[in-house]
Length: 376
Image (tube, rainbow, N blue to C red; front, top):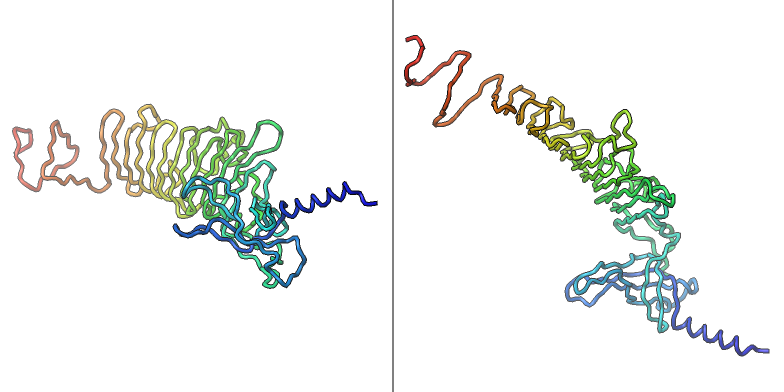
């Protein structure tokens, strides 16, 4: 005997599913707002997947100009505009039978997510889109997985060990054009900590936490690094604040600890050029063609803080190649030294006090002066 109640429920479900249902579709085409006066918005054409494998009428499983749900509208001419890429699988909420709205992307065997060391790490990776292979007859994307994105950028937050309490981790990294490891190994399976992001050829900002996982940097360090090897680094902790610093400093680049910063020029990681440094004492150093502030090569200008007793002078400009230098001593004396010659070139050179000459004094022009002890 027919159960009328169950038949009514089934019929109601069929009617609801016809007018309101959630499906996974594939994006066939993307339209976007390109020019100021065009009428296009962030809409997509999708291919329905819940259908027969082949259908002579492609229009039967194509849905046109479905709007994409935006994360942030932002007012007129604003917002964080987003749309899925061609070939992406998306969740679509259909209503009124053929009307629909794209809610977001759906993971599939065609597009794997990026690897993360913990489920709570943030890994925002993007790059240039590589076109997947599409069947002209059915419009399906058959070759899976799709080609990996190339020349990626990445925004990373490393959670650290999942312990259910605070501890090591919380390091940040932002890689600009482009992450060479993410391009060579698209899965990013080797990106475990902030140390996994190497210096060579990479363009990035890094910010180490107060309990960093790094074994190559002090806690609370900040650094901007250019692909040529140049960098700007700020240190906020000393070796005494770092667990990795035992017999020697763990830092892979030179530092003097809290308050130290450096602007370092380079044409390669092993080809450092000039630098400008600020030491924790307040002393500053401008040095050409070296990575070591104590290196006695090139040319150096050093300004010494009055309470810094490491030097007897307060200012020095020195050419290490020739040995020539200019010094302002902390007692106020000024020393000019040259192994060759010192030239004063001016219409008038005025001396207001005594002049002591230890060697010979040759005057090529005329000489006019008062009484003196010179022999006639």
